[in-house]
Length: 490
Image 1 (cartoon, rainbow, N blue to C red):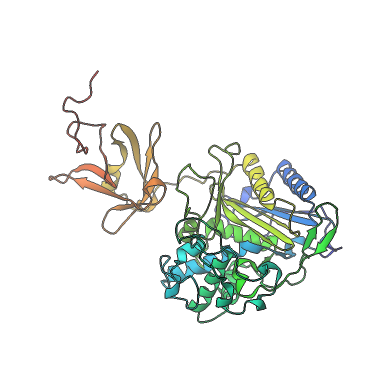
Image 2: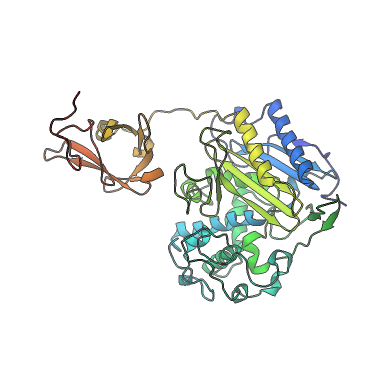
């Protein structure tokens, strides 16, 4: 048995920092490396995951400050240059396809609320929108028809029509999250249709992989690559797994990659890259598409990214993570990002079942975040001329008797946050008409307006019909329903 090619570094080797994933922010360089006790904890977690999961090999890595800060391997046979050994990454492929679709959206070639049938003929889901397909809300069946697609050749389903069984629509579109590999096969076909018939993986290489330097990410394996195994449930015995080209189902899980390439991908998912997709569009991928925003969820799905909230024991309120897991016969993969910490972790294994690669990856991430929290970014004063009218709006405002503070941020952005007790915090960006639009939280998409009196002075703020005034329930305040004329009393 050879889990990976057996030459080079030993089975417990740990990679030093230095493989660039993206340019670091100023000031990050001095803290790119990890402390010895942190590295030992990471090595322990990787070793424990490999042994408990009985995996022929497990590789892991941590990305911090836009670059690989640590990587390690545990393998039954010593691997050769394990950072460049390919593993099949399964549904992590979907994150790449989602980026291709959002590139088309940003170019104006489609809208997320477009029905698929507007751009692609010959499917059984013409009314499902692009956004629903990206976030698994289309209601389509989870799998294509025919035998187990992950273990059979794509030639069994040569045309799009061959993907659909007798009942392709399992739930009403838009109602619920229902994971659909079939939906991502259709998104890959959509990319090909809008890129003049070029294969989706060719588009991916030219528009995403090459700009990011991900030269070892391919649709078919190439040496050196790990072989996929099934581990007997009741004996320490192995059975080789097939690795077919899945054809039209490729966009759902065909890619092979390396831990070094996936570190570059993780850095991109944290920061964006204008050559591929803007930081704003990457952040949009992390917005929950089905569960409500706020504190009421611990797992969800955005636009091509899985979302999770970790246990509060790891951080106050839990850590908000975005990423994806993947599995194909003989392989498991997981990549998770913590945007608040500018931190990510990757774990890959070459077995069908056994190790919790998601648990390994999140464990690596949490080990670094707990022991070496991110150095806060440097505070800088605003640049450019100061807008005195905006400055005059800052300070305390009251929604009824609840105090809020309005602050002016870079690029004329406003931030509204409660000063005491509970309340809803939101950021707002300015619109051409002088209003502001909410970016996050309860006020996402809502309009904030400055209302002036007849003399031009500021009367109050209107936030989606909520009135904020300079005093708490002042008798003269334009509060809906009025204020008791006797005012406050003791």
